[in-house]
Length: 480
Length: 97
Image 1 (tube, one colour):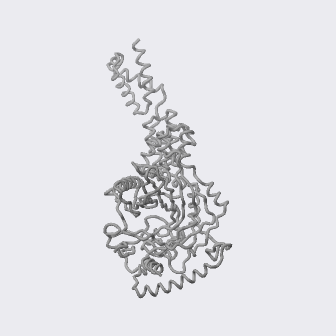
Image 2 (image 1 turned 120 degrees about the vertical axis):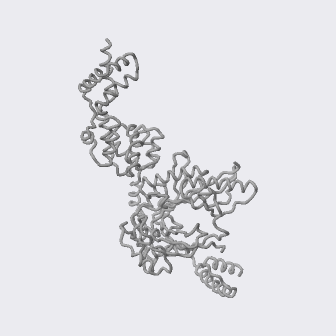
Image 3 (image 1 turned 90 degrees about the vertical axis):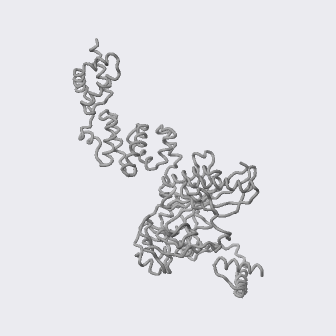
């Protein structure tokens, strides 16, 4: 390839608040259309916006998590544009003094290359447009729901430090985990609480000059970001290779055709007539408060992976798997306080806990880690075998019962009394002289048959390895 | 003068208002006066004056606690066209149309 892609991302995340950015309307998803609106978010005359403290806190938290400088005297600006998703005909955003700037994010798979964060700023979300009949430009008419208008939004702009769709994908995954672990946003792309636009230009190898930049929109998943960037890099290279010109434009990713399309015709640079928002006084953030917010930051996903590897002895892939699923990782942490068999714990969480959560549609967040710990302890003591442990665990988690009681109640407790087992083994040996004979001649099948007989007489409550031992002991003396 | 007319065209385009050539003459004249007045103000030496964006610098925040919103019927009372509880708006045209 004679060209090197230069990629930057612009990410919007809805902040995890109960209410909107500037008014007390609910920010909940999925309410009846236009039922979470008030004079402030509709921009009715005489209403005045008041900043949501929690949104501000989450904004500062995100800024610090991204190693940004927090601007104590940041302020809001008014961005004017006419579009039916804005009831006020302007959006309160931040322009020249964003809340955070000049940061970076270390992405573990992209070692040794922190990705620059140019800025992150607070703004309000627009309403949701539903285009009736086809896409944006083909629609007959559109329907608007203003419930979303005014929900706090954080815009994060990266430096053009990424060089491939793969890198963009890795970056987005790490950013998502960072925001999830810090409870800044729930990052649900399917609900639109995380969205991403991508900018890409090609730069000739061995040159510092950049080609014209193309902005890609309508990216509905991280995989779409990767695929669209790969498509666009190839498209631009093809244009340049026949000495054509890449137009500076906005292109639309079509998920079905897996191509980008020019979205807009010739367009003048937008003129948003930004000016300081007169209704919201500038911020004067207190240094101590900023420090307090910073102190509440969760460990980064990278630190967490390291802890799982170094402190708990998990393998790299295991640590990655846990950290990629915050609710499982948190479950692991809760359980690891009381149970030191970390590998065993990991295996049960990635296996049984994941299965139960999925089958019963319960988030591991609300599953009781104590139930797993107690079940594993019962198994370690030899009171129950692995199969029984699975049953006990599931019932304990789903019904909220105590594992030890379950084991007793259900008669699930393993027979560990070797005397009682010895009698049973004796019985079986007496009843099956032919099998004993075969076994003594070295026929393995006969041994398994005898073992099965004993197990069935205990109704599966014995530990097979113990039964085997007793069998061996009792069969061989007969030989002599 | 030519600069002034291209500015009028730019503004007319941004505001989606078509202007006749007479109207353009009129607006260009008015714009000249307005810009002249702004120019006059800019002659002042404000080097030592910190920029003032607001009259009040006292800011406050509120707790993140939901309160009652308006009833849907109230929200939609002045909406010209609706479909159940959604606002119906004309199709969005591209700038070329």
